[in-house]
Image (tube, rainbow, N blue to C red; front, side, top):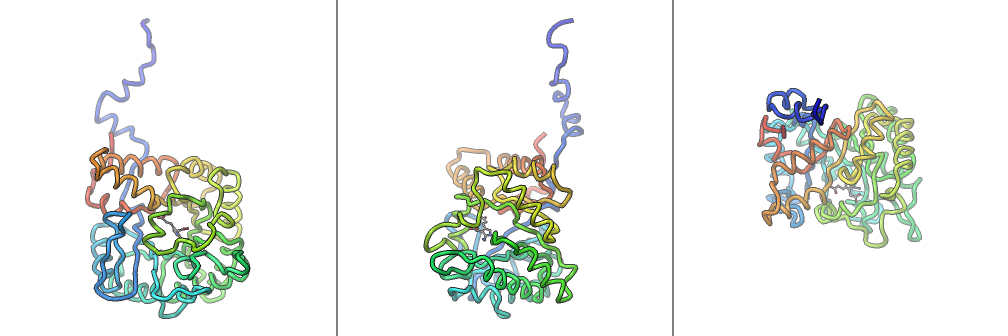
Length: 328
Ligand code: PBG
C-alpha cells in the first residue's frame, strides 16, 4: 500500500461533505450588539476609532434599535454616556439617568429586543475608574453599594439581564442579594468574570469617554499573562450567583474561553471587544484583507473555542449576510 495510508483530504474534497462535517456554526441568534447612548437630541456621531459604530441620543437610538430587532439580532448591551460625571458616578444609579431612561423607552418601543446593561461606574465617574477613589486607590467595598444601587435601578427600569463589568470583589453576591430582596429573583446576571486589563479596550474608551484620568485598571482587571486566576474568578462568581459567565477580550484569550468551557456547564459569553473590531476595520479600509471572510473566521473561532454567546460590533454586518455565515 502506498503512502500516505490515511488521507485527511478525503473528508475535504467534496463541498457537501465539508458542509455536513462542519463542527461550529455561527448563528445570528447568539449575537449581542453593543449600543452607546448619549444625552441630548438628534445626535448620531461616529466613533472615529470604530468606523460604523455610533453614539446615539435616545430619540435616534430607538430607530436604530428597531432596525437591529428587525434584522434578527436578538439582544443589545447598553452603555450610557452621561452629561455630568462626578466622583461617585451618581448618574449610574440616578432614576432619570441615561440608561434608566433608555431602558424604559426601549422596553415600550422595541419590545422584541432583549436588553442587557453593563453595570460599571467608569462611564459615570469624573476620574474614569470603575470604583470609588480614595487617596489614589480604588476602594472595593464602598464601590459595591453603588454597583448594587445601579443594578437595582436598571432592574426597575426594565433591563432583561445585568452584566457587571467592574471587577470589584464580591459584586455578584451583593447584586444577587439586592435583586432577590426586591422581587427580581428571576433577573439573570451575566458576569464579566474573566476580564483582563487589556489594550484592546482603547477604542471603547473613546466611545464611552471613560479613559482613567490617572493610573490604570491593573488593580482590578486581570493580568493578561494569567489563566489560573481567570478560572478562580469564574468559580467565585458562580458561587456568588452568576448565571452566565463572560470572557473579555476574546481573541487573545481563546485559551481562557476553552478552559472555562471545560470547567463549567454555565452558558459562556465572549466579548469581541472594540480594539478587535478596529483592527479589522483599519485593515479592511486599506484593502489588506477580505473583511467578510475575516469577520466570519474570527466569530466562528470564538464559537469553536467554546463561547455560546458573542458580544460583537460586527453583529449588524453579520445580520446582513443572512444565511451565508459559513466558511466551508
Ligand atoms: C466598562 C467596560 C469596558 C468595556 C466594556 N465594559 C471598558 C473598560 O473596562 O475599560 C470594553 C468593551 C470594548 O472594548 O469593546 N468597564
